[in-house]
Length: 268
Image (tube, rainbow, N blue to C red; front, side, top):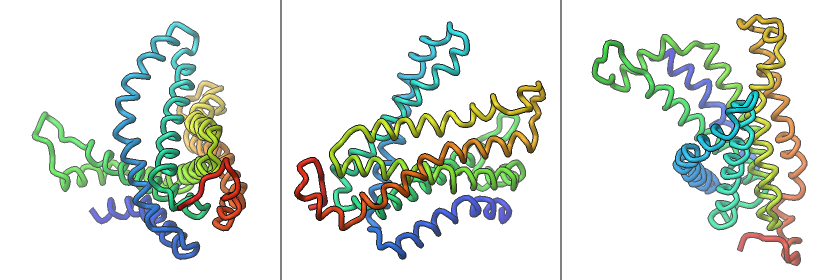
């Protein structure tokens, strides 16, 4: 159990530390965490019906085509990404009306990532079962089963993917949507959807461009794993650039100058 707790801590603790340190350093509003929970909950519970309706439609449309299964992923990613962006936009526009600064947007993305980590780990734990059709095991028993199957390498990869790749993506997406809310413009929603496509397509791109795949060696090993993580890091660079680029337009004092702009919105 201690071993499993240490592996989970490797994934969960860094985002929590980053969130606390960021709030202490910048003075971002703690209520941002609550707003992130609201957006996450709405998206989490509404996404399943959306997937159930959208996925079969595009699967049926593109299946007859060559590489139809792969092609069908792009419109699905666009719809899912746009839906996610709309949930965030509505949250900032009508709920989180007092946390519209750059520092708050960064904290929102960090908090959203932390919630995603917690749900992922809970799902990983709850999926453990016993053999021979026995009664469902308790949480303690599930943890005992998982501790032998969940390796340190897997924990390290999850920590990297969530603590770096997904966090950069969520923070960048949060800020571009926040910019759209501040300026009352909808095109940032499309940018957020394109970022969603990019981050989801990166593993597929890494798979098909891996030298092991091209030579017919499906084992891949360490080289393929490193290549996959490099491609995902490159895919997160646009989000990282947005984080840096939007710092000045979303600074708190900028809200005062926006009061004379009919296309801007600011906290009351």
